Length: 94
Image 1: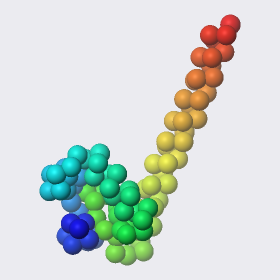
Image 2 (image 1 turned 90 degrees about the vertical axis):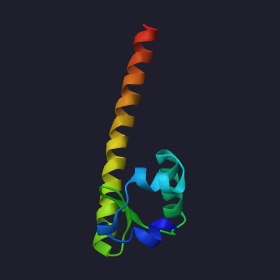
Image 3 (image 1 turned 180 degrees about the vertical axis):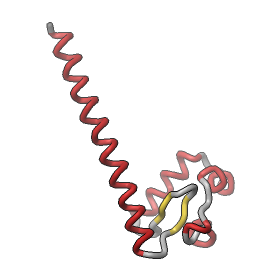
Image 4 (image 1 turned 180 degrees about the horizontal axis):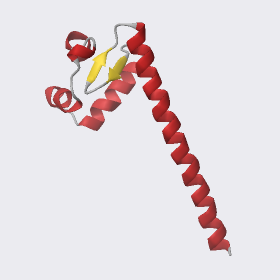
């Protein structure tokens, strides 16, 4: 696997575009593969100007913090969308 062989540590990060080209899949498919590898606990990655495999607890903590922040931002969007959907339903019922 290219990630574990070549993208170890932030100094060896590989961009999504470069990695996707090398394995001949789309960027979206690549992100899905990386997600699946993490869920299978086969690799712990971070993304900073490209994917890399974390080799220190600090790198892993930083990666997790970034993911938590993304989830919190997505949850705020979900909450806003639900509020707006409910408002649309109220307006339509009036």
